[in-house]
Image 1 (cartoon, rainbow, N blue to C red):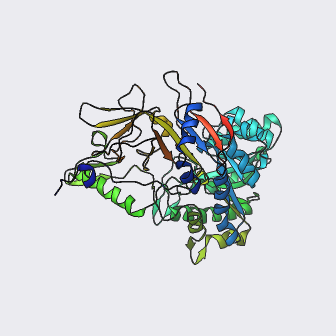
Image 2 (cartoon, rainbow, N blue to C red):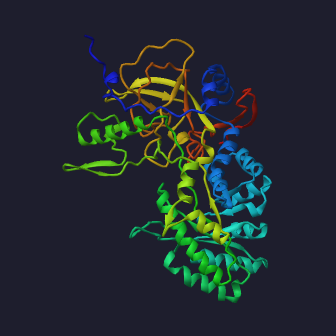
Image 3 (cartoon, one colour):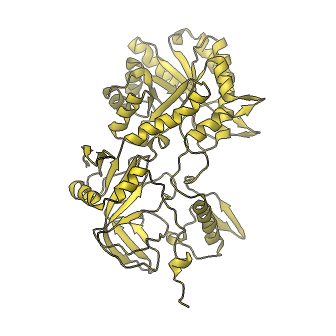
Length: 480
């Protein structure tokens, strides 16, 4: 019998993580000629996007509100993607925009979004940002006492009241306090609201909204926080504040993968490697958040939940249905006429984009690892977490040799750490220079949030395509 190769046994490389592909992506991958033309015209890498999926996501994410007769909706988190096309789509779909800097506020206003549809959640607000928001009539989410003092001072200097929301933190969930470095302590809510109501200097500040920033992708945490904010809204209204809404921030889940089984197998194999029960398949034996201490495996996976059972509208439904004392959140909101908002970025950009890059070289490092070099760098596809858990797709224009080992995908920075993935992946066939690597679902944060220009190279170009005709509708060329 033939000896099973390391790649076939799955011990030489990471278990597969098959990317979830929208129908337009599948059709695009059947046209490698279009991908080659785009890279030839715009350079490697190039980000391609469509807006039709963004519009579909808006409708999907709003459906739980409509089903439960809850008012409110969405603010698109502009920081997740810098392209103006999605701000325009948000405006046309009737949702708001969440901005995190002076530049984002100015660009959003210039793109025609009504100021009353713009919320400013920036951390470290400057005087110019506050003055711009107040002058235009945007809603400022206040994070701390110094910001509140700044808003008061600017409001007095420009002679116009500010629309404000107050962000709180420290919510109690089953005797556990949710950690956050953002927001006023929730136990100070009463004194802050009382002070604002009784301060003659701030009577023109309209406290319209209560806000939460919750880091983990936990629907119970958000639901519990929302119930606590409802009670604070009751207090605020009794003090004369015109509270109309609660905002639970971003963090609405999406899926990157096709298979729950693959995601589970990946996690089990990672732990087995750290435990020493199988060879490592990560660069320099990186545990991706796990580590071994004696006989114990400690830590948590530093990974986005690339497969999950509560993606997009299911996530929002679970929050709306979160029940305390027999009353679901959606009923508590409806009974009080309170609106509920989320600030999704990633979930609104699900299925929206792909990143294309040319293969540049093949070689081995000093440890004998096979490296596949791409004409990009790790900041062109950079997650917040340790790893982007979705395998690349290789497009070739001819037959290729079968690979009998895994490979690390690396970039072209003059840095030992320039790995596109920290895991060794199975590519099945050995790509050649000029072949194309496609990375699905890169539009949300991955493509733009941390990208940098290096070695004098411009940032990648961005191409807006018609997913039916493949016509290029618009291009934003890379800049230095």
